[in-house]
Length: 245
Image 1 (cartoon, helix red, strand yellow):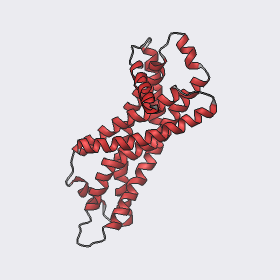
Image 2 (cartoon, rainbow, N blue to C red):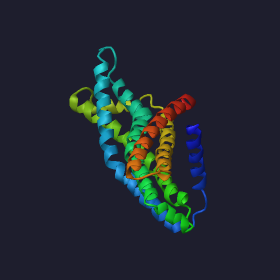
Image 3 (cartoon, rainbow, N blue to C red):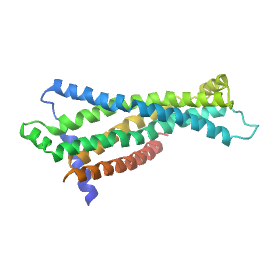
Image 4 (cartoon, helix red, strand yellow):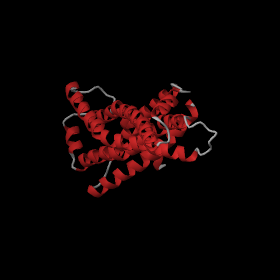
């Protein structure tokens, strides 16, 4: 019963944030601020993880393909498809669930505990629209862009490692990237990116918005939101793979 209670409050929060903004300019300013916080603030860790993710994929794939009868050009194809289909959209969003999700949850939780949300509601401001909507909209806008950056850097990290380690020449790697490429994989990855972006912003926003207690509960709520978000992302990953592949 507790699950249905939380799920109902979550849906009501999403419904309540879709009302017409009182001051569109103020909401636009908050939206741009959140885009900067979520997008630019997460760019560094996304770049580092993506390069090493592609590098490790290339090295481990080369290690597993020890049969001399297998053309090593397949290494580039495996790295490309692995990065595009799974690593960039799923792994990056799981990491961002900890980085972005905890920030959203703790920020809203602190405002709730310090009664700032109550003060805004007394002033007649729809706090769900003003506080939650810009965060979700900014996440849906910037996180798919981060996933695209991750795809390029992951593939390049594999190329750099393969060429430096002597496993595969850069020209052969580039040739492997072009062979048997399926454009639908990119579409599937972007569908996952948009879905995960919504989940990793809305679920922590719910836990932060409805937190009760003091500073200790803020930390617990932030941790709980990250754990649940990661579980929901992995579950959604399976559902999307079963439906779209």
